[in-house]
Structure formats: C-alpha cells, structure tokens
Image (cartoon, rainbow over the protein chains, first blue to last red):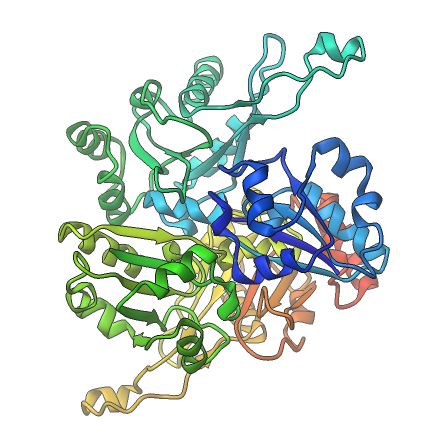
Length: 283
Length: 283
C-alpha cells in the first residue's frame, strides 16, 4: 500500500490517529519538504514514528517517483505531506503514477492552510480563488495574481494569498556552474507580501485594493504561538508576525458583520479597524 | 480550557493525536451533531475516548452555550465538531462567547470537506465561493445559490456545493402544535442536488450551467468506501453514490488539462467525458 498522509500544520502530534498507525506500518517513510514545512525537526519525527524519515525534495519527487513507489505493491510505503495531501499538484502526479503501476493508494486527509485559515474569522465559503505570491527578483516580478485578486474583489470575495517558500534553491550563478550549493531557506513574511501587493497596485493602478484595504496576516496557524493580526495593508507592512510560515488574506467588500466582529478581536488598532470598515465595507 | 476539536471526516480514528489527548483530558465532552455527521455511532466514540459524549443539537448550542462552557476556566471541556472547527458560524459564536467569559480556548484543526474535496482532482485554489443547497419544499425553493454559481462560472472557477442535512427537524404541523416529535434524518443526495440545480436553471434561463456541464459527485470522502464520480449533470442525475454524506462540485470553464486528467479517472463514461470536455471546456 502507498499511503499519502497529511501531517496537518504545526507539530508531530497534528497527524491523525489513522495516519500515525499507517506510518508505523510502513517500511519506508518519505517527507515532502519543499511545498511547506512542519515546525519540528526531522529527528523528532523519526523518534515519534520509530523509523527513519527520508527527506524528499522537489527533484526527488519529480524525477524519482518510481524509486519512491518501489515495491509498494508488496510493502507499505508512506509519503508524508505537511497540511493535506491534495495541497500541491506534485502529489497528484505521484498518486496517478501509483495508480498506473497498479499500486493501491490510500490518502489520509488532514487540516491545511486552505481550511485552517477559517481561524481568522472570515468564513471559508466567502473566499474566491487562492493566489500564490512568489519572491520578486530584480528581473522577475510576475503580477498575474493581481488579475485574480481583481476577479475575486469584483464580486466581493476574500482572497487567500499563499506566500512563497524557497528551500534548497540554487543561486543562478551556482546553477550555471553546476555547483550543488544551496541557498539558506527563505520564507516570505506578511510584510514582504504586502509590499509586493502594493508595488503592483502602484504599477497597474486599477484600484483593485489600496492601503486602507483590510488584510489579515496569520502566522504558524494551529500552533500554540499562532499569531493573527487584522489591519489595513498599510499597518500590515510593518506588523511583526515572528517566525514562519505566514499567510495573508485580503478581506472582500461583502464582509458580513459577524465576520467583522470576529476579525475585530485580532485588530492591530480597533479604532482604525472600525473607521476603515465603516468607510470601505458595506456592513 | 475549552477545546474545540475537529474530528475530520469519516471515523473515530480521523481525530488528530493532539485532539485525542485533549479529549481524554476533559471532564465534559460535547459532540456537535447537526451541521455534519461522523460515520460512527456515539457509543463507539465513547468507548474510544473512554468517557461520556453529550450530543449537542442546534438548540443546545444556540441557546445553552453558557451551560456548555460552565466551569471551563477550571476544568477541561471539549466541543467536538465533524470536519474542522471553523466550518460553521455557530462554532464561532461559541468561541467568541468563551473569550467573553475569559475562558482559555484552544482550537484543534482537522480536515473538512472544504479542503478534502481536493480528492476529486480539481485544484483547491481554482474554486470560487462555496454554496449551500437546501432541500426545496412545496413553498420554499430558494435560488440565491444560482447567482453565486453564476459569479464563479463567469470567471471560470469551480463551485463546491454543500448539501443539506436535516437532523432532529420538526414537521410544521408538529412545530405548530408544540409537539417535540422529530422527523427521521435526511441527507441530500447528489441526484437531488442536481435536480434542484437544473430546476433553477430551467426557471432562470441565464445559461449559468446546463445538462452537459461537468460535475463531480463525492460521497463519504476520506472513508474506505469513498465514491467519486465525474460526468455531465445529466449523468449525475441518476448516478448512484450510496450512503451519505454527499457533496457536489461544478467544474469551471478554466479547468486545466491536469485537472481534467485527474477527473477523467473518475468519469462515469470516459468517452462522454472526453467529448464533453472537448466541446465545452477551453483545454
């Protein structure tokens, strides 16, 4: 059996009982470690599961899927994914490849940012499409997210922005020279995401959002030191969220008063929050 | 401490390790049993947790929240929710009420239909707002979902339709006479949902969707007998999905070819699927 097991969001105990039992039955255990990260070390997971955990980077998952799946028709193999297994397309590929090879597959679900973001108080059914925000470079500042946010905001919906993580990336120079030297990991902060959002609004000037649009930053969701802060994008430019991972939500104009009530408890400044909500939101 | 614990989707072992430890530390344990259901009996849960489980119906949660929260500043109390705690607004009310009373609250996340629907192969970030479909009655056939689907489909997004469940409901006659007699529980099937969708399209005639629109029905997601079937709405009118709970997705026009590949494995009829995708989808 090939198990694809969601680990949830925060630490080793966020796995489900079913997931843990599956992992303990496995002869090989892989941990996907490039689309998201758990807040615990590999060694801690190994101790918890009582077995070795093999880190699977993007290269391994994309080019060595058959090695991951090897012999899974006879033994149990687990592929662990932070959040839920269906969070990233690469896991879908692995799933389809296993099916092609007639290997039985079982998916064990868990919380992911896509539903845990409900913690910020904006109702999940009022979200539009999700956007991904990548680190801008000197020469690459893709702004297709702007069109998606525009579509969401035109119909009043909230937008979840997933923020880039860079793990085991090579510099262009090292890549060109074929040197397997990797940059230190980087995780986009709420501040950086808001900066990039505002840069593109300043460039495109279509009024999709502005410095007084209400946003919600959320860090380390589901952990004991989870931080949620709601405020204007201007305020979120400088609010401190601490360690990764961070996510950002832009509140849509159709925000319900119950959603505003819930958000308000996370307001950076309740007076500013009330003023801006009264000014820009149809509540 | 007041714990709000997500149970996940299917059986007693879908709780997280963290959630189970929390429940076992509690002196009172409530199970919210009206916005969704788990596929196991209360008695099985009690045996698994080693304690009594109090069923909390809508009336209790909405009018007796202080009884649920009683003494939670001194003892541990758990409120169990199928799926993730942030799936329904009533849980938010309970959360806010606990905060008002200065009771510490801890939320333990889990998978919910809002992210587990990824199992059908359509990517979660391409979904628009979620709609709820209620059972039509002779005199009440609300069609506001139609406008929301229209908004989603105009920008090519998928729509998740959550289907009504009726638990512990009174008939109008019994309610009028004050008789506490409850109707047997009812769970909307994919077939019924599609029927209601088509009825409203026939009435409104705005061409938001049609009998050849691709839909995906999903039943008992996350369980061993999960069923996923993709096909035209016409096909889904009569496809058999078995026991509850059912959900439905309408595929948006922007469906990516990788999403179509994934969906295709669930096609009721692969030839019909290919033909309809070629005809109506921009792939």
